[in-house]
Length: 232
Image 1 (cartoon, rainbow, N blue to C red):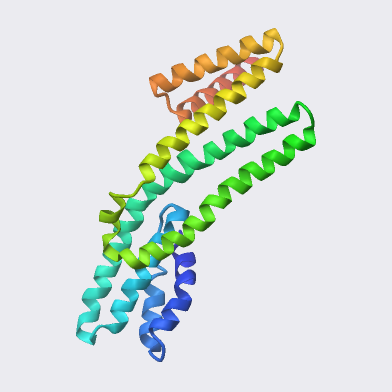
Image 2 (cartoon, rainbow, N blue to C red; image 1 turned 60 degrees about the horizontal axis):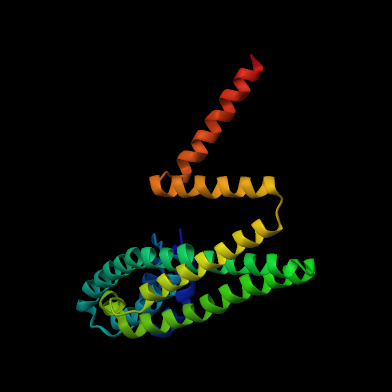
């Protein structure tokens, strides 16, 4: 999955660690083309750690290298699995919806005066806010991974990320409520009723924890049945 990209990103570091040792460099390239998968933005965390561990392998005596390579593989796999959940919750589950909600709320507000202003706000708010956070963090994660090495799990326990995620979720909720209020204010009576029913249904589905996949499956089956009945 992400193994080739990960190996490509490590290529300059491998050349630096194994300068003049082409056979060892080739082995390092091969071991990082194996299966690798994590949340994309957290991959730089793992890459920084692997850079430090590859330095340890390159500096080790020949008889110590197999054990250090095995340790590298184990830590790389464990870090990828652990960081995937953190990254999914932070970026996919919190930051992206928060930026989207802010962009939509601003777009609706500014569109009351100018459609162009609303479109410009959407572009700047979503792309600017999201990339303005994620790109610097990816560089920071690379540095921290290199510094922390196998202590990543212990260090993340003291990380302020969970508090940040909670705050961002409150921001996203406030922005979503602002969008809802703006839509209700500018809608007709029939549209307001439809919106209220939609929010009520969404709340019931969330309370009952009904999976979106089950809803999609039910909609597909209903469509098939309706088409079959119409054909008969």
